Amino acid sequence: MVADAAGVPGAADVTFEDLAHLVALPSVADGAHEVALSATADEVVRLFSQAGVDDVRRVPTDDGTDTVLGHSPGPEGAPTVLLYSHYDVQPADPAEWTSSPWELTERDGRLYGRGAADCKGNLVMLLTALRSLPKPWPVGVRIVCEGSEEMSKGGLGRLVGTDPGLFAADVMLVADSGNIERGVPTVTTSLRGTGSVLVTVRTMASPGHSGSYGGAAPDALAALIAMLATLRDQAGDTTVTGLDNSGRWAGADYPEDRFAGDARVLPGVRLLGSGSVADSVWARPAATVLAIDAPSIADATAAVQHEARALVGLRVPPSQDAARAQRLLVAHLEGAAPWGAQVTVEPRTLGQGWALTGRGRGYDALAHAMRTSFGADLVEAGQGGAIPLCNELQTAHPEAEILLIGVEEPACHIHAADESLDPEEFRRTAQAVALMLQELGS
Ligand SMILES: [Zn+2]
Image 1 (cartoon, helix red, strand yellow):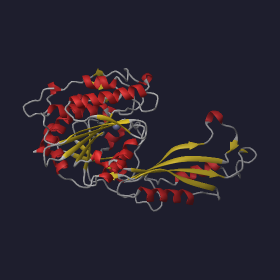
Image 2 (tube, protein in one colour):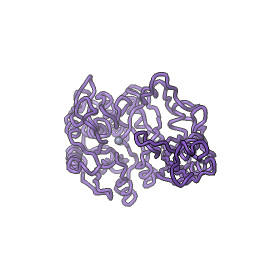
Image 3 (tube, helix red, strand yellow):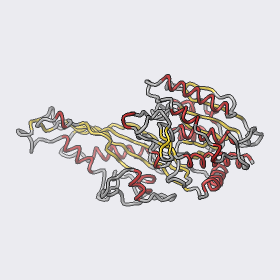
Image 4 (cartoon, helix red, strand yellow):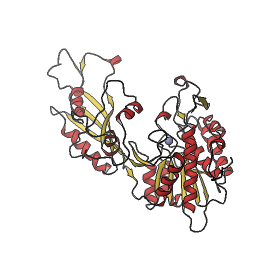
């Protein structure tokens, strides 16, 4: 790696050898890829050590995977910046991919492979930024590279709770996100929380023949469908009694046509909600029926069902208390049962949302750096899903500025087949991180 005059990576300096090497290791944290997962952890230790980070090592977590940590203290008085990424990846079925998910492959200017963006692309982006800066670095640097992010095993989060000192930093750059659109530098400032429930409806002791009983028999599946239908109004807004659904998103716009493309909505099918797309996915709660237990069509008989179950996911914006929202959903479904049907509603997963509160020197440095490398102003976006680690880091270090950024953009199709990386987004983001570290240290 050669730094250009400004001390930041130029186009010619970026190579993707390390990324190719990492992508070739199928580091899925599902218990079936332990050799690859461990080899990847070793490789991450080697790469960050070579890049100049001190004391890089594997630290076991209680979920059976190791997090890679490293720390180079900065000059007296300089801030410390934590650089987060993860080295595990989503599974990939080669049959669904155009080229092997485990071989970084260039096509039409993009680089394809599992983890090319999420999150090995981000990992190598951070490495690229560090390599471009001469040592000694102007800031303290902490490396945190997780081994079980995609499986949500939570080992790292619990390690943050038990040993917060390992994660002490003024600015935490969580590189597991990206830009709302190619070329639009984005920081994610809001993550929705979750509050799912399992609802069970019982109406009879056993199924009844639909010829003998259908018409008068209290159909449990019909009862469940009626209850679930009360979770949405005509406009498509989520309607849980007592739960505010009027939030507005103040940051970047999310145009409907772009959303429809990102979500792969079919032609002629309309989007839901009375607000803007950004309001609906970043600032408001959303209930989604995730699964229903009922006879499958293959197993169907002519019977009125005596019992049915549904798993309902609830996304809760950070401005609202997720536990309260979950309680409201439980009460709503209990109250929506028709015909005196017996209903039990059990709370399942629960996680509070997260929002960036203070915009301090870290945010300012990021905004300057992004403007320089992208030639465009930094915009703020939300993310509809949760990253529990952000809450855990924030709880351990309430003063830290947590900034979510990264090389991802919608065309990356993270978690899907044919995941890919745009090398130009990669280069600009690496450059921005290097510039940000320089500014924070000056
Ligand atoms: Zn990720």
